[in-house]
Amino acid sequence: MRAVIVDCAIYREGRRTEGPSDFSDALAEARATGDAFLWIGLHEPTEEEFALVSSEFGLHPLAVEDALAAHQRPKLEVYEDSLFAVLKPVLYDPESDTVTTDELMLFVGDSFVVTVRHGESSPLAAVRHRLEADPEVLRHGPTSVLYAVSDAVVDQYVEVGIELQTDLEELEAEVFAPVGEPTGALAKGTPRAPSTAARIYTFKRQVLEFRRATGPLTQPILRLSSPGLPFVDEHAQPFFRDVSDHLARANEQVDGLDRLLSDILSAHLAQMGVRQNDDMRKISAWAAMAAVPTMVAGIYGMNFEHMPELKWLWSYPALILFMALCEVGLYRQFKRRGWL
Image (cartoon, rainbow, N blue to C red; front, side, top):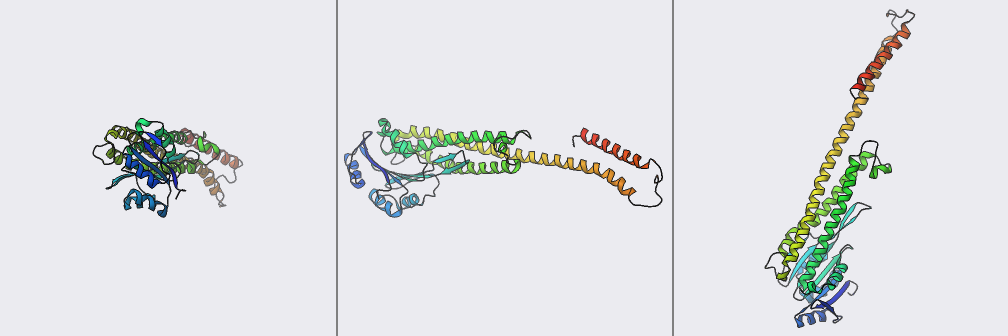
């Protein structure tokens, strides 16, 4: 059981204090004093490992099932003995251009907070250290943990959005780069059409994954910033409103990224269509130029006995000159129209 407990501490008057090593005794001590709470952090517990915690803290079976399943949308649920929140921290890897999401669950109840972490990108260690350095916030009890974790996750959304925006600008420059002047992935010798189209589609998939984390969290944060929610300190509403503002910014970033990607994809497809039309015009022009000498040579290659100019001394040079003049005329005409 100890392998999954990342940290366990009692906080009294905004300060971390030493308590019993057994979390059951620690919870009893926190409730006995009335001015303290227990914060226990777990990392990917199994059903058997989480059974003791859930029974000791009186967690609702449905919430426990969600915490163990780890495939939940961001949400906030109120039960009789606790508040259950699900957050999805996001991590962006610029090397592989991939967005990964983990899951973070919080149980907030009478004098306790239980956090269950799935994955590696959840910023709980940094949150705990930042809270312990700010006793004034920590005095608000379990609500302060819920606020600090939500704030850290949403701030991470904003940072990921900025990184995605930077990569999108590079992709945009790649799409609209003049022909013959490759940038980004094209500069490495990757063929233009497959590389660019594939990157746009992959980028759009990453933005969709990002949206799945930010979008559903809007309603839970609004509920936390509203009065009357059990297990939430009424003085914490302004803090959650600040988180809501940051989340709105992150959602605006996601919407902007999605719209720009759709526009870039449309522009890229239009460019490909224009290039194909240019290629078809060039092919047609060269085919027309090849048709004239082919036609003349075909006529005089039929070997009929009675054909004009067959016995004329200058017939051969005249035909060659005629075909050459036709080719020059066609070339100048197609060049003037921009087909060559």
